[in-house]
Length: 180
Image 1 (cartoon, rainbow, N blue to C red):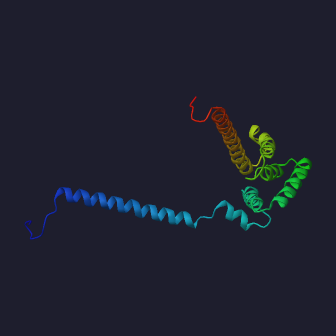
Image 2 (image 1 turned 135 degrees about the vertical axis):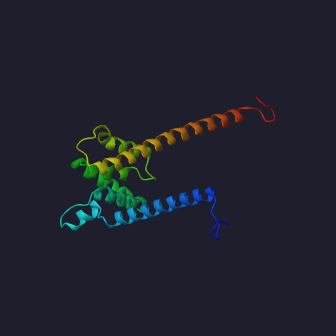
């Protein structure tokens, strides 16, 4: 006990308290800063407020919804949509049409040939960065990367199948009970 009848805190306790108060002040400042950010309007909200103004990334979001729709189509409906997109892409090679065509040709059930057509359609957007909508180009880059990855996996799968076939042929060629 100290001279005045109450406990005197140790220096270590004081350091912990100061450190705790510092952390508390940082947390409060962070919460206040985040609360202030919430009151600011985003550019998307500002452009949505203006009649006729298009939201940034609207085409890219529409393309994602389109791909989700493609995944739900039956085989016949998908073939019709692929044909429709092929014809539209021949007439109009805009970024939106290019990506729609590539998406239609690259659904999970698509053939290797269709996926290669999708890659070919996206190739110009990968080579030239200028003159393309940045959001659509990023989406095209993602789609292109996934198609390349899918093709690589397909090649690896085919190589494994070839190895399996050769092993089966070798085993069938060997006499029963005799190991080569």
